[in-house]
Amino acid sequence: MGLRGESTLTVTDGDTARALGSGDIDVLGTPRLLALCEQAACTALAGHLDDDATTVGMRVQIDHLQPTPVGASVRAEAVLDRTEGRRLHFTVSVTDDGGLVAAGRVTRVLVDLERFMSKCCGATTTPS
Image (tube, rainbow, N blue to C red; front, side, top):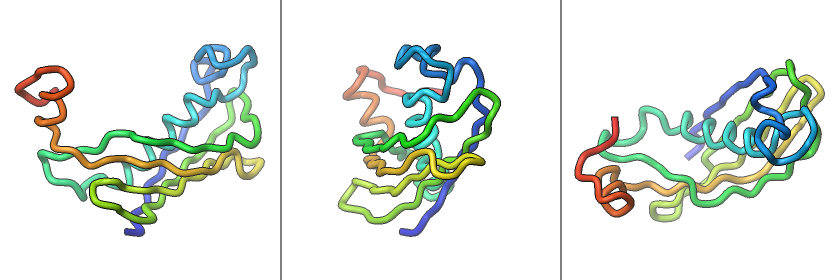
């Protein structure tokens, strides 16, 4: 526990609510913000999982508190708070030059990659 990861992004037109279909304004879209938080959680786990294991998203609870314009940089941080069996619970926050943009929690589940893909897609090999 206590693992930390971060991810940064300079907001482009493709990251906006308008581009992502989650609104009609040109600011950082919530779906992209969520992906940034998930990326930070995955970064926290990098190098700490067996080669045949990965994590998948299970739950995201986010408060998107303020807009971030195109051209601004945002930074997501994820901190592993606790584990419950295969569930990994992270506290996440996103900031920009104006302060706190979003805060919440991300839960990811530890899975065996080949078994997961076999259940999901009938695949017998891991994706490359």
